[in-house]
Length: 308
Length: 50
Image (cartoon, rainbow over all chains, first blue to last red; front, side, top):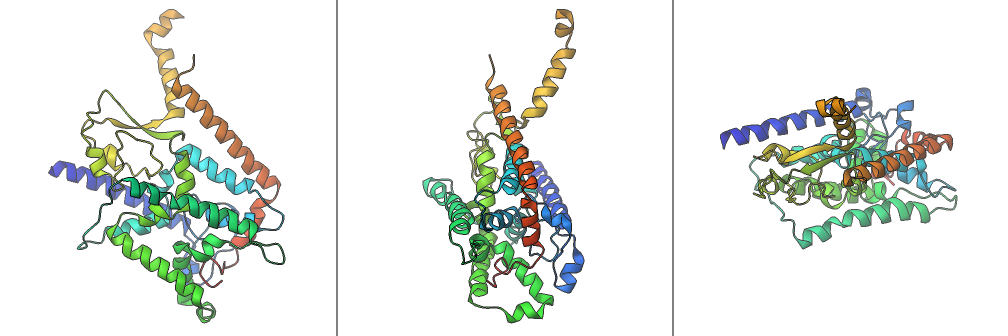
């Protein structure tokens, strides 16, 4: 049992380290934090894969959800090929791998969940949970797509409704900016209070529930989740090794029955199940590499050489 | 006869090619400049100032 815990801890430390490195790299404009300003260089034309507000003082790239709304809300645009293509590229290559390993807001919630001395609540994956998870899709459709497209001002510009009314990542960015920027502090109003209320709820709930924002509210996770089943990087279960013992489900903080649904849309690809499985029955399935490596291997087998 | 895995790979690659094509079309259409324009000024909506 001690060995099992040690193995899980090692995996967790490894993942946290990668999350920290990627979050720092995405927010490496350190002067911004000191001066209360944002980066204005050309790299901001590129999207980053995770939820990382472009109003964050350190952000070097653009948040794909904010970018999507910005393009959809601009006059005369009804489809965003650039951001849509980017989201589909990330999704089809790796599904929700970004959520588990690269997203700064995912790291934020993970760190909050690590706070000791608070009783953690494990939400079973029943019908209620599955219905609640659908909220992500409602938020995606309504706040990220429909409202920016159709609720426009007299100039024909739509506003980024998700960023404006929901996104807690933007609120964190605002707080970071306001530390050094007095002008912004003076502009605070009811909307800031509302967004701080949402951020507060996310923070408190993240301490007791694993990744509440990712589970119910994140439109980015909703998009990437759609690709989990068909992504080039997936999980698979070796049915000859799997004994259906359920350790994977008990280890999974999202309570996903991995042995039955290795590519569930709710899975953030943290990989805890792979580490925990005593039979090594859950595997990373890189479809593209498998295809070419297997083909190459089969060419080199004695049978293949003989048949030539 | 193609295996399930082979079909899956073809579907994934088709989606990937379409997605990359969409990015290229977006760049030609100067969508990335809209993103750049929006992200290089402080987004008041994002930080909760409306």
